[in-house]
Image (tube, rainbow, N blue to C red; front, top):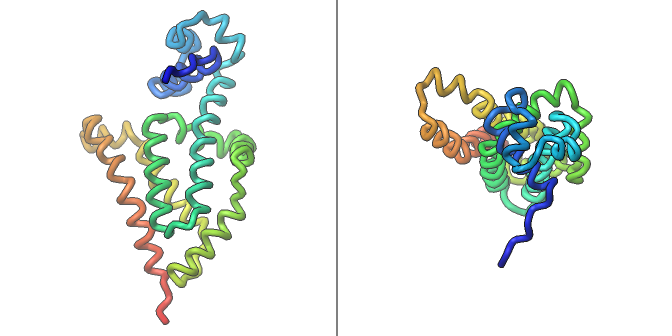
Length: 206
């Protein structure tokens, strides 16, 4: 089956994704993105007037996909440990290939929190409904009362930090690129085990 050719805007977004991944926001240049997309810089500016607007579009496309999958996973009927494993597998895979995402999230928390909220809204992700759903599942599976926000904080912090701290980790522990990627792959199972083991510590005895 022949794939439909990418539109000009899609070509730009794909090119920008690659350049932002290689260089980050500060290091990326609009001319480099135009060259990657195989077009002139004037056409690039016609579709996206600034690097900031282009970066926002690339980020929203990637992060919205994460949110959509998270909604499907966490509102499913799977056991909680399976949900966490499924989400971590998806999330770590995405941020490994799109290293700008954690940086954008961290910056957005302070500079543009309303923008992150907009992405949640677009994905129809109601955080309060999600928290209630997780809280009830923790009660049923672990017979425990735990604020489910801690679950999210643990998952996100333990998966975002290794990506943000990549240069530090590789320098201090003298990791090769292959070794670093192997560590990220292992996090897909290590983090869920850590989180679910912690939940068991709260389990009430009959």
